[in-house]
Image 1 (cartoon, one colour):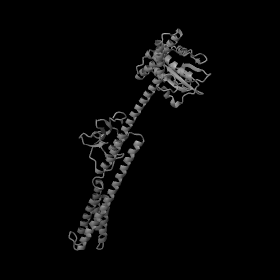
Image 2 (cartoon, rainbow, N blue to C red):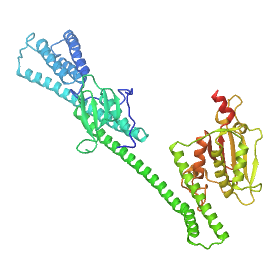
Image 3 (cartoon, rainbow, N blue to C red):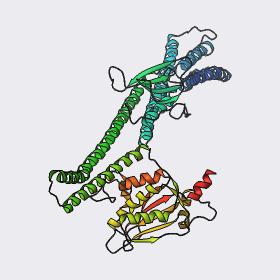
Image 4 (spheres, rainbow, N blue to C red):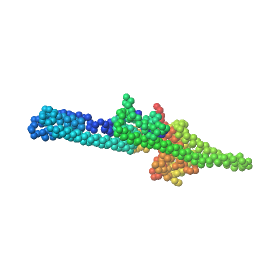
Length: 510
C-alpha cells in the first residue's frame, strides 16, 4: 500500500541484551551452579562431620549422630535441590551404618528397625528436596511472569511515547528472547522494521503477522536464533498480535492521509470551478452579448457601437487577465516560472504600481529610502506583486487613512542584533513594506491567505479568482525573495516583500 510507511531500518541498532531478557525456565528448577554447589557441600562437609562425630563418639551419641547427618542432608537439599540431597542422604546413610551402627565396619543391619530408620532418613531428605525444588520452580515462574509483564509494559510505553510501534516491538522481541536478529518483512520483501543480524548458519523461525491478503500474510516476522520454548511462544503470540495491530493502524493512517489529500484536491477543484463559474461567466457573457449586439443589428448609432466595442474589449481584457493568472499559478506550482532578473530601482517599481492602480497622495503615503541600493529582480513580476498587495491594502484600509509603502534594507531595522554577530544573507535583503490599518488577519490564518482559490483578504467575492497573494508569493520566491504577513501595530496587516540586493548578488557571483 502506498502512503505512510513505517521507517525502514537498514542496520542493527545496539541494544542492551539483558535489559528485558526473559529468564529461561527449561531444565531443572535450580540452576546447575546450585546443584554443583550442593554436591561440593556434601562431599566436603560429610567427611568433616564424620571426623567430628567420631572424635566425640560415645555409646549414647547415636541419636545426635543421626540428627547431625539429617541436618547436613537438609542443608544440601536447600542449596542444591533433589539430586545432591539424595546423594548426601545415601552417602550419610552408608556412613552411619558403616561407622556408627552395630555391627560396625559392615553395611549389614543387625535390627530391622534400623533399616526402617535409614529408609525414613532418605525419605525425609527426598521430601525436603522436593519442597525446595517446587519453591524454586514457582520462583522461576514468577520471575518469568514478571519479566513478561515488564516486556509488555515497556512495549506499550514505547508506543505511548510516540516511538514507532513496529520497531519497538521488534527490538524488544530480540532483547527478550536473546535472538541474534529479528526482521519484520512484508509479502513483497519490504523490510518494515529490523534489529540485529541473522546467524551465519541460517537458523530462523518465521511467524505470519496480520490478516491474510490473497492467501498471503500481511507480513512475516523472522526470528534469527535458537527455537523458542513454549512460554516464549505464548508471549510471542501477544507480540505478533500487537505487530498486526500496528501494521493495520499504519495502513489505516496511510489510507486516511490519502483520503485527506483527495479531499483537499476536491476542495481546490470545487473552489476553482466555483470561481470560474462566477468570475469567467460575467466577462464572457458580457463579451458575447456585446458581439451579438454588434452583429445582430445593422442600425446602431456611432455611440452605441463604440459602447458595445468598449464592453467587449473590457470583457476580453478581463478574461485574458484571469486566464493569465491561472497559467501563472500552474507555472509556479510546477516550478517552471520564467524569471528575468536584473538591476532595478525599488522606487520605480513602486511608483509604476501606484500609477497602474490610479492611486494618489490621498490614498498612499510613500516612505522610500533614498540610499537603498538597486534590487535584483524581474521588473514585471515585482510590479505585479506590488499591484496585488497594494490593491488588497487599499481595499481594506479604513476610509480617511493612507496605505503606507516603506523601503529599507533589512538589517537597518535589526538594531537589537548583537554587535559581534555578522549579518546573515536575509538581513542584507531589501524590504518593501505595505502597511494598512484595516481589520487585519489573525496570526493563525496568515498561511491561509496564500492558498489559491480562496478569498481571505486577497480579493472580495465579486472580483478575481482568489489568486492575488498566492501568485505574489510564488513570484517573490521565484526571484529569490519572500512575501510574508505581519500584524500592524495598532491594528491592520503589513505585507513584507523581501528582495535580494543587486550589490549582494554581484558579490556572490565573483
